[in-house]
Image 1 (cartoon, rainbow, N blue to C red):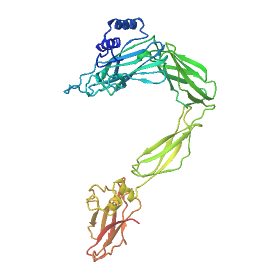
Image 2 (image 1 turned 120 degrees about the vertical axis):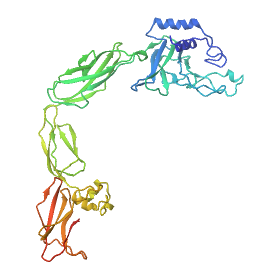
Image 3 (image 1 turned 60 degrees about the vertical axis):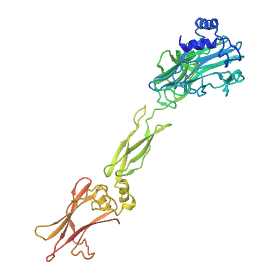
Image 4 (image 1 turned 30 degrees about the vertical axis):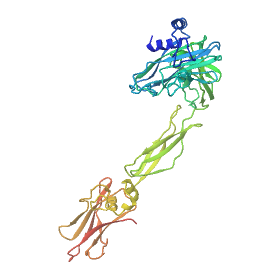
Length: 491
């Protein structure tokens, strides 16, 4: 027997002296050892109607919390009900004040009894009396939530017949892996414990499921049971019903059967769990449909799709097998330009439907979209963001990174050995849109006399996402100088 059980038993069976319940003069009264022994013998004689309960509130290492235990019974309405709770509280902080009224409980447990009409009956609480006087020492206990003591008692002098629930709960939290044990004594008339009904829920098939004609449908359920005081009970069987007709049962977990529908249409399925004491619970119903004709899903006709380079692409595809439909999402970030095809299929329990082909056209980013991709704003249109001597528009044209100094050596000027032409070699991105690049020449830098007349280009050299181009301008006899530029503009 726990120390808290002995303490609760002595208080529970004591002869009350003075005011009803505890008081400042007599405490809980005079110990009555014979009455305590009678409770122990009564508990031993009928363990189905326990008088002494040693329980636990806990939080497991994985975090599962059991902060409330309920004990339910049917009372005869003849004699009083008394419930006494005691627990050994962990050591708290030492008090330095005399007669301090500050609660010092580390773990505050609450005891209450719920009457058949829903009324909550709280335990005795000693009133705060302020200054200690002879009159205040005679004040009776009141009823309420006790946040001070590690002993609590609820007493119902004239309870009506019906179902009562004694509740023990933790007001607060526990650390993982910590438990708080307690002792509870309940006595009075010959109460009959209530056997809690089992719980049951269908787990398969899902509500609204469709099956082709001729399918054998697997049906399964979860069921569990609690007996008096929160001790695990046992499920005797789980029966399965379609409409009101029983179609099978299973007597051991996992509870499941197989069912062959007689024809097409909708069916309502339920499960009923029965425990070893005969209590029953019926599950929430589910509805399934058996298709009269088997059909594979059909994907809706889809238009050609367009996307942007380096930009997340998403498109929803819907397939239907009538009467239901479902959707899937095609997504990705294109890394190359051009036209692409993708084959999409949809399957159900009947089979795979006719595939369809999606056509994707991936186009390059515009200059403003390119700026946004690199987190640059419209104010950066004419800037040199990375300070490498090449403005952002030129970086876009060449396929460079505007946040990285990568422009060195990308434009080369050359005169041929015979000194009869000059050339400019430059890089041009294949992932641009809406900009033009033109090589122009001039013999005089004092004015704006630039021209593209006579400029020819050799076939470009491909490098994947960009190409290298060479523009050539002939040099006439007598010319002593010739200048070339690459001019990039937005129309």
